[in-house]
Amino acid sequence: MKSSVLLSVAVLASVFSLGASAEQYQGVLQFQSTASRADVRAQAVVAAHSEDPYSEAAQAGVPPVFQSQVARSDARSQAVAAARAGNLYGDVSGDGVARVVAGNVDRQAVRAEARATAARGVSEGS
Image 1 (cartoon, rainbow, N blue to C red):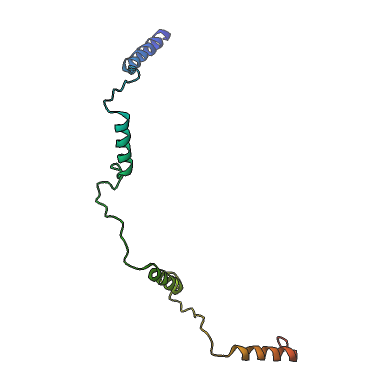
Image 2 (tube, rainbow, N blue to C red):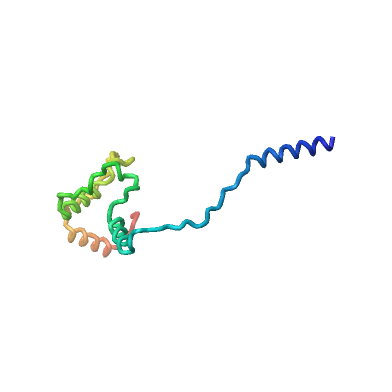
């Protein structure tokens, strides 16, 4: 029994060893260039300043950045107006929240009334 187990293990080991192979080491590759350092440097500068041919949008025909015809001050005033309008797509945009509106009561009259009330000593709840 033991010999058959050992024999089967030996057969399996030999089968697995037949499939294993190693790569051959070729050593360090020797690169022989015919271009001078100045030529290579000039090509590198051109390549660094040109578009990336390997980017995702290289072959997509992406249009250049749009140059706006709107003045910066006009765009800023439109942005301020939009910010003050609130979120039109928010959950509470149509709830009819009252906006703060300037009253037509004179500020000086309100102050004078407050001073007179304070002088009389009227407290809350009375």
